[in-house]
Image (tube, rainbow, N blue to C red; front, side, top):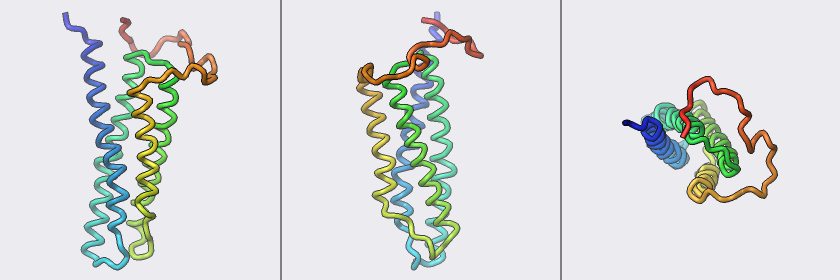
Length: 170
């Protein structure tokens, strides 16, 4: 007999990790790509840099972020993980999403104001990405007991409501 629950968990976990690698790698690469933007470059170089950053952000990084979040959300419900470290992780996923939006703003700003816009030092957006990524890795791999952090009861225990889909029980 095939255990579909185990197969689905493995599938979603694989998709989640692959999408995270693209998302986080892209968020680390984009500020370095933007740092190559110099107001004194030739129009052809500027067009190439603008096209590369825009394509990376819109075609690779943003879809990978969406896939990572969707697959991660499915994993939460498939594995029934409702523990304090997960909520801390979700807080840093929100911080990573904020870094994603900020880097997207920088991509658009450089594209809309050629010659007048100067992207910030790449250290700032790279740090804004790297800090949440490292904390998320520590939380996920270490799964620390965060029981001493006061959380409301509605975050600590299931509400007893039925999900709009059938979740297999273990």
